[in-house]
Length: 375
Image (cartoon, rainbow, N blue to C red; front, side, top):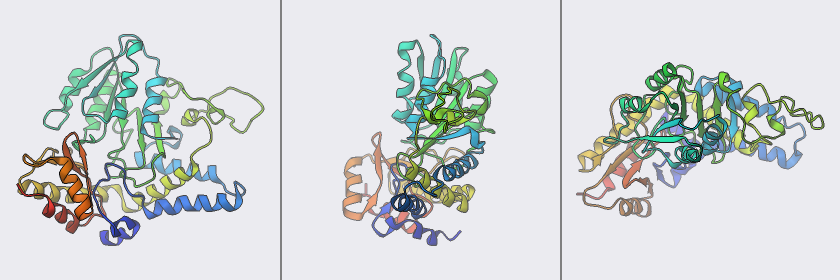
């Protein structure tokens, strides 16, 4: 892959050394062009000859291919929170059930489960240990009243990548549902919902896929679609959505039952363009490139005297490198990098968090290392 030529897909490289893809990423040109295609047609022709929903189904197929699912198991949602809330609010919980999660999750993967407490559902948190979530701790927390495990594929503040295959296998053996927030790995590390025994998965496209905010998707394993009740119901939830005047209340025999009304078509088009670019490059190639860049970054900041908290072990490393200084405040460093050097990183949980992407150059990695304040 000619990584240098890929930079043409990301005009932000003209303005910034952008290394905050774990936050809100720049939109790729492919994604923006797809949205513009929809907007121009809608501007000039309204819906006539648009084929907008046929195109949405082609994007649905791309999403399904990305996670090794069937298109009937995938639908669109506003964002990750939306998808996770569908799971929390759609299952038939019993008082005494519990949900196992971690204390390292982004808030979107905590609040939907905490909202179940008035119904007698306990939320169990497995604690981060040296910026890792040991798989054995998660397994120990599961008992005969555990209904579901809710976990991120990659933790947002540490970059720790979960062993979803091992966790999924164990959950499946115990009859426990596995719900994954995949936003921090989707498009950069392989996800196979079948091989990993994932029951539910939600993600927005505005991080590593480099698509706009507010255009996400939701996966529900086919066998569970009769057990997860739709919580927002509308004409698009039905088997015959075009039968406007029939009032025939019959849910679609697919994940479309979790639709309510019209799609965010500009967002769906843009999401499709973003996934198309990812598939052209190949997720395996993206993974290798990203691990190369983040290994270089982790080594460089460590050599400069910073403490790297992100695991760099095989299978645990990701596109996120979290680190900190014993002598400098992270917020001050972050502001200095952005205002003085146009280098964009983030601060999460009192840690500096850098998250480059595959179009980032080695020179940009080295620039970040070079301009960090010395100890």
